[in-house]
Amino acid sequence: MVRVQRMLDACAELLDEVGYDELSTTRIAERANVAIGSVYQFFPDKKAITQALGLRYLDMFSARVTDRLSQGDFSHWSEAVDVIIDEYLDMHRHVPGFRSLHFGDAVDIRLFDANNDNNQVIAARLRDLLISIAGVEESAELDRAITVAVESADAVLKLAFRCDPEGDQHLIDETKLLLRSYLSRHFA
Image (spheres, rainbow, N blue to C red):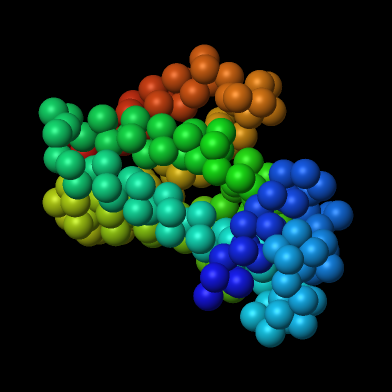
């Protein structure tokens, strides 16, 4: 699977350099130094490659958040909000291709799952993390709260990066405040 990882890495680099519209399987093959047939052996088209890359980002994000939250050195649940936002910010700033693809919404709002949009998939992952790590009880109210939090954070963080390529710190701070204030009704 080293070839697949090279193809995904090449896709990430090219997304940052040329964007999704100019991305092609030929460019990915050339950058990954593999035959075009190798690309098609694993991926039927550029959308499938970006889907795999988006899923890799989602797994990476989940693993990073899980690792940080499982360290268990939090005095209050609101610190978990900061961890989640900070991990997203770090990936946005330092992981090749993430800035361009995010969690797939730049390509397809339902890139991860045909029945749920990308933010619903992310919300479900975060909900599962909170249930397993923070001991939060599963409920429809929790599902709704996490969905609203993810949608809100997504909107304000996109604005932060439109205003400043590194993320407008004032808007990032407002995102954290917004989430802490809203979620305090559910986690107090």
